[in-house]
Image (cartoon, rainbow, N blue to C red):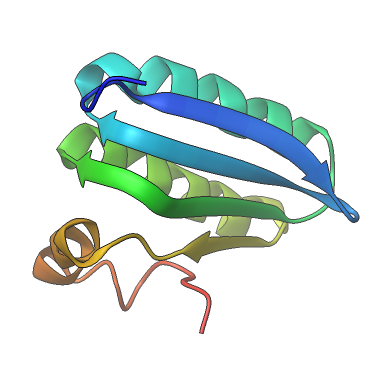
Length: 105
């Protein structure tokens, strides 16, 4: 995988789905992430989004994750985000989303 390429991989894990992200999530990767999260929600069970291999996230990526949060609140399903590296998590912190979104402890 080249450094900046965005990749999303979903897999069943227990009764839910883990969606793993890697590379750089920007506007170009937004549609792929939306499709993966829609499929994960349709599969039933909790959704876990693993950001540990993400190198960068911009506002379009944040927007998708906020929509996931809103859908969970309104739709009654569980989701968890696994925090990414410091340079990625800092984006969430600067926006205050580290306190709003459901990050794993």
